[in-house]
Length: 162
Image (cartoon, rainbow, N blue to C red; front, side, top):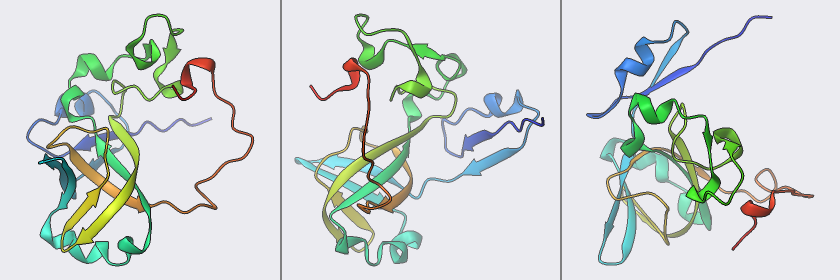
């Protein structure tokens, strides 16, 4: 059995090239398409102007998956953590990061489902997002009820809505 190791590097001022250098596997480079902006009670995803044509038709959807980078955790120490107490609560059972939505993980990819408020020019306004201002945005994908839905969902007690 052959195992491929994926190393993903975000190209930005604070990216961790050292993590990629430690791997002998293939490397993939990802460039942000824009950033999260928060001001005056509004949450905006401002794309680089060159990506504006990619927003065409997104306003016809009610929700969007925003794929972003946990840039504040882009240090080797945090990227090496593999087990956490979910939601930062020590009362929750120690769990592997792949069984949580922890911001510390080997590849700092995050996913948020956001309600679309408006799309204008290169700016997507969403109701809210669990990312900080200036967070790099990697991609956007519309929420589509068929493929993005699941039946018979099971989650541990700690993961149930509060």
